[in-house]
Length: 163
Image 1 (tube, rainbow, N blue to C red):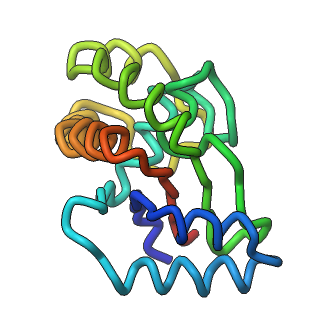
Image 2: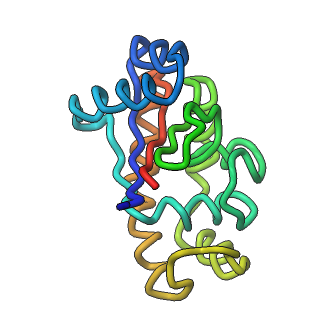
């Protein structure tokens, strides 16, 4: 599968529906509806950079809620809403989004570089090296802007990726 990560800033109604969903099928159907709406400014495409970004923002591992809050919640943090291996969906509350946006503001390319080369990235599918770092760092400006906007609008965020 593609493994392309996407973040969506949710309306209160979308957030409530996702949190109330009964099982993976209902969650993925709701995510499909959110994706279809694809509202400009409420979406942040991370492509395949999400994996390295999550590792750099946490402890080098690819896991749920690893590392310290609030940076642990940028990608795979918060509440996992699916239990399957085909689709990951993680929900971050509006309150958590504000903390994430504030902490993320301090993450720049030099910070990311130190973290990226400070970890071995066990079981990483990408090619760990300079070109992968440049690819990953290219997503930082949009990631910053996305979380700033979501925090300012009081929105929860959901991260989605197909495996």
